[in-house]
Image (cartoon, rainbow, N blue to C red; front, side):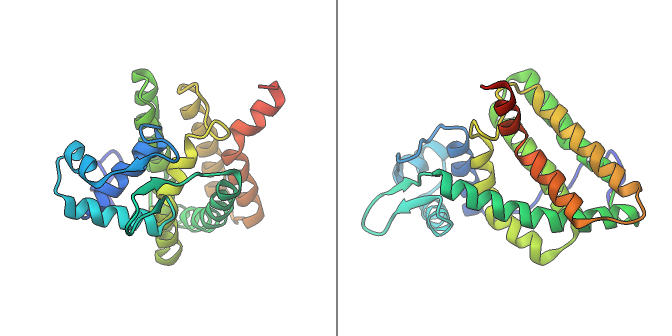
Length: 230
């Protein structure tokens, strides 16, 4: 059953190791842990207050995803997200989110999902901006796009999106893709939300139009910096 407008979304139940992996990815995204830095199992267990078993499992997952390098008899280190890797992440994200947005719009048209749910993440962005909380702003940004992912009800593409969500979170905080003015971020998403609502009101959806709008949203900061010479 769909949640009524204004109701809180039920939290996603995840394993402890998944939660630990998310915490490590967030630390990398917010530069608490830097590229090339060693990631030590015992230190993480102490800082996160959990046993070494879920830490070890989380490190293996992040290593398999390419977020960490090394491992085995060597210590893990944060991988360098060089321009080539970043471009790969953005290309995959654009493809996946284009299909997710298409399906989400169809479900919003049919009344099976409520596009008002997008506003929840935007309000979180505004609160984060008022508090000057970069980490919360990053997570709210990801939640905006996760709302589209969930509204799409596309199990296959949604699972693939989940697989790169941590990569996307890390890339979000790169200067190329992120506005240092936290107040600007909810405004940018309000503009994209308005585009989405206009598409919901139309009789048909054009995939190329969606892809172009998504790409424009994803590269907004880079484009604005190019125009200002920043």
